[in-house]
Image (cartoon, rainbow, N blue to C red; front, side, top):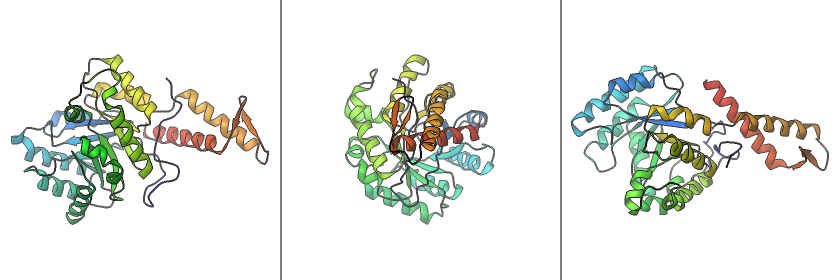
Length: 305
């Protein structure tokens, strides 16, 4: 199934501080902050956003050095217009408090926190960020990866205006469900849909989970298309080789851009008429809104090129 446009923040935001400006997050790549070579390579990748990881990709002995490296990367100004975030260790771990304080002071675009399960945890995280001096632009990105988080998704999404993004942790969710990774992701569809509904109702962004088999190009493409068709803003990635496919899949196609321009031209030409058509189809306000979103998305992506 081919979709004509990527989803983004709703035209009418649900929160007063959520911008209607589209921020490209088609490709969001995890990078181990303990790996200096990986951090250097990330400066050259055509990725929309980076998650500088202090959690799963970093061994216990390397976590303090990884924390310092991630914060230094954020402060370096060497990553162009890529959106930089830091994934800290989870609530209750021995590294969490120091990670959160250091990341807040570094001031990335977002602080990614694993296994955020309750609205109270969202509020506690935001309070800790503010106490540590996080600048206004540093938002909370909450990972949704447990059954409890799925059941609490709507309350999570609305717990704080500082929460800007849901990140689906599909590997952990499969584990918690005692399910299997299968083509089409049938065991996950209810959870993915429920989280997406909550994100859209709250006016926040939502990112699909990772695809584990980096050698399975066909399977990866199929899962990107599935996530796009469901309505996700983009996908988290574990390998640089996945970036280009993800960028293309979650961007408007040339045909979609041409169609959007045609719809707007027909609408403007038919101003004041009771009925407006384009290519034989009736055009309403909702079609015009979608067309405008397609073009604003297209322009935002081109501006990053």
